Amino acid sequence: MSIKKRLLLSNIAMIIIPVVGFLIIEILLGYLFFVMGNLEPEGDSLQRFMSYRLVAIILLLMVTNGLLTYFVSRTIIKPIKRLNEAAEKIKQGDLDHNIQSKKKDELGQLSNTFEEMRISLKQAKETQAKYEANRQELIASISHDLRTPVTSIKGYVQGVMDGVADSPEKLDRYMQTIYDKTDQLEKMVDELFIYSKLDLDRMPFQFEVLDINAYLDDIIEELTFQYNQITLEFIADKGQNFLVKADREQLHRAIMNVITNSVKYIDKKKAMIRIRLTEQSEHVMIAVEDNGSGISENELPYIFDRFYRTDTSRNSRTGGSGLGLAIVKKIIEAHGGTIWADSEPGHGTTIYFQLKKGEQK
Image (cartoon, helix red, strand yellow):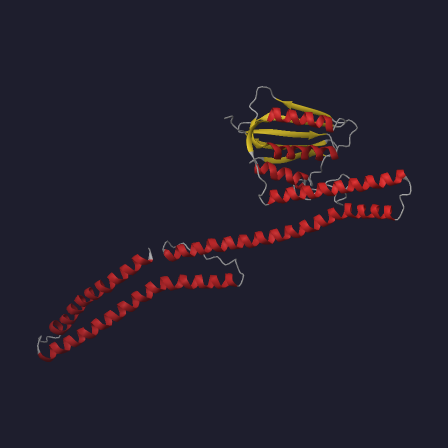
């Protein structure tokens, strides 16, 4: 019952109860005085009757008003007290005090609104703590990954300055190493910039309907020139609907990151990468399969985490920043798709991602 209705009923009761009480008192006192007491309704008897009746009515009004005020105020003051206690706890930083109410009145609604605010504040606090932990991890990872090429560049430049590269061949080797490390550093910074924009939802996406079959054909042709030492295969069912809604540039980045990652870990003499295209009821699935070293079962769930590399020492033997697959995951999720991986150590890894179908206008 709402507070408004409660107050209205209380005011009505303050009128009805005294009136009914007055009638009852009138009857009872009249019965006691004039029936049981055999008194005549005149003179002193009538005066005493009127006095007792007045006192009884005053007491009735006081009791009625007091009880109704107590019960109505109790239903208002108690929830307000709870809200005040909760506000004090929130002020002190305690966000674990539950104040949800089952009542349907205005104060119950206010308590539930307050509870939703408490939950939002708690989630915001937890998210802030998580972001702070991620920020610290990010700084530590960036510092580690940038230090290696910077140290190498500094060392080789120092060697050139000190005259260690005392022959044209040695100087060329030093300069080539410096160039390679600088190029590696530039790629790491670029990937960090892209990941940061994706993580903050500031990467613009230009979605259009693509024929993913033809799109992958073009990518395979591009890869053939880039990786002529690797056997590339593309398998797609004929006559299927392979239209997807995607951003051409970002999807290209995602696929190339997957291919680049696969190439780095291929350890077979006959290197192979196979791309499969499969139509599903509401999605199109792309599978990128390689015959590389594979990934262990305990490491597989983490390969899409930022800065995660399967080499626990985080050495840069295979290059990269550890952001390649994290970027892929962000891009696919921005497309409304899903990504996962399957791997068998020693035999290879397959990375799958689904894209929602699009309709040609």
